Structures are given as C-alpha cells and as structure tokens.
Amino acid sequence: MKAKRTNRTRVGLVQMRCGESPKTNLRRAIEGMREAARRGARIVCLPELFLTPYFCQSEDHRNFRLAEPVPGPTTVRLSAEAKRLKVVLVASLFERRARGLYHNTAAILDADGRFLGKFRKMHIPDDPLYYEKFYFAPGDLGFRAWATRRGTIGVLICWDQWYPEAARLTALQGADLLFYPTAIGWHPSEKAKTGKAQHEAWEIIQRSHAVANGCFVAAVNRVGHERPAGGAGIEFWGQSFLADPSGQILVRASASREEVIVAEVDFEKVEEARTHWPFLRDRRIEAYGGLTQRYLAETVACGICRPKRRPSGVLAARSFRRP
Image 1 (cartoon, rainbow, N blue to C red):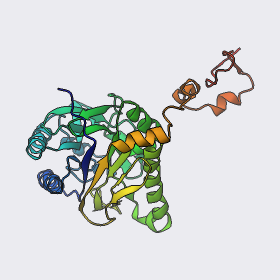
Image 2: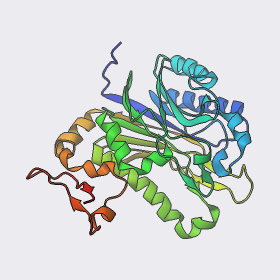
Image 3: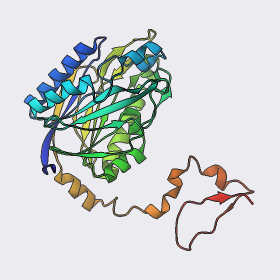
C-alpha cells in the first residue's frame, strides 16, 4: 500500500543511558517511545546500539554473544509496540547475519508495526575506544529512503554522519528527514582541551547536511559515562538534536540527562528550501567523477602520467594512464 503523504508530523528522540542489562535497556527504550508518543511523536528514534553499553571500547570476542538476527527477537517486540503506539520507529541493533559476519544495523518499523527494512552502517571507525572494525563488516545495502506512513525518511548511523556523500545519496533517494542513531562522546582526558571543539564539529557537520540537502536532520545520542572495559571509558555527550532544512536547531537535549525531546517537522519546508536554495538543481553531476577515487592529488602531481583526452567543455575529473 502506498504511504499516505503527511505534511506535518512530530518527531521524538529518545536520549538514554545504556546499562548492563539488555532487558532493562529494552524496557526503558520502550518507556521512552511511549513518552514520545504521549507527547504527540509519530516518528521515534533510539540511540545507536541502545540494548547494551558501548562494547566497542575493547576487542573482546565475548561481545559477539550480544548480537541477534535483524529482524529477530528485539524487532518483534518493538514492532508490536510501534503498532500499538502507531509510530514509525528507527532502532539500532547489533546484527548477527551469519557465523563470523556481523553488522551495526538500524531496523525501520512502520506505524503499523511492519518491518520495512534495514540500513547497515557503511562507514566503520577504528579509533581508540571505538574499535568497531573488530566487530562490524561495512554495510552492503547501500543508501536508502523509506516511504513510511509518517513521511519519507533516511537512516544513517553515527560515523556515517561525517560523510557528505552519505547524506547526499540518501537525500537523492527521496528522504525528507535523515536520522542518525549515535554513540559519541569524549575521552575524559581530552574533554577540557578539545571537548567543545569536538562537539561543535559534530553538530556543525550534521547541520550542514540539512542545509546542503534541504532536509531535516535528527541525531540521537546516548548519555552517561561508560567503562565496560575499565580504564577511563567514554563520557557520552548527549545533546541529541533536530535541525530544520536551514540548519536551525528546533530542539536539543541536555549534555548530562536522559531525555525525550519532541518537535514538529513540516515537510513543506523541504520543498521551500529546495526551491529557494536549489542546490540539487545546480549540481554539476558530470564533474564529480573524482569522488569515486580514493585520492586524486598524487596522480595529478605525477610527472610520468598524462591525462586521457576528454570532450571539450566537460569538467569530468581526470583519469590517468601510464605511457
């Protein structure tokens, strides 16, 4: 059945602490869904990997026991709740695809409880206390948008938020609203010196996705200090937010508290933004071939390489061949 077009809807973001018990975390996530629905939310998003503490702080084979199929037991439980509340839900889970093959995955559930599909995180980090390459294979489902009963949404996950290409390709699939389930915070030893700049960079890049693509952007983070592997751990900075197509913050959560934040989005503003600032119209797609290359400067600077001829007036990125 074709999704009914909805011009206005309310969006709820569940910013939560994630404790040791998956059952408790699931119960509390559902409580957050219910609070959001009571306040009028019709689309709800949970934080990244909300069922557990952020276990990627260490490389520990025991953590693979935390994974489950998607769809699977948790999506069954959440589907029933989404149907009861009549809300669209974005839920980030540790997916067990097969023996030895795992993904960081978001399930998209419609307001009637149907499992619409899933997005597998495309960009996988490997930084101190963010050892995700040990656990997750890169996503292989591409960038997608889903026409839900409450609007057309796209989903990306945490590290994906730093990549303009990911936001653009999802918007080009028709997404009016981009969700970023997230688990990001400070290394406590760095917070005093670089914490403000780190947080501002994270928020600015996502607000810029809203402007560049003329769409709404929602980032939902966890909160609290987690030390599942010992040591200093990570202080998650919360501050979940929803931005409109001009990049303005409609609502922002605190840096230290669990919180459900809700705001209205008017999808007519997507049309308004894209006609007043027609960035999609003015894209020079014939000039962007270089984006499919890992790096360009080294080939341009190479004295023994010469460019292939290309048609006059075409601004395509150079490709090179050896003599």
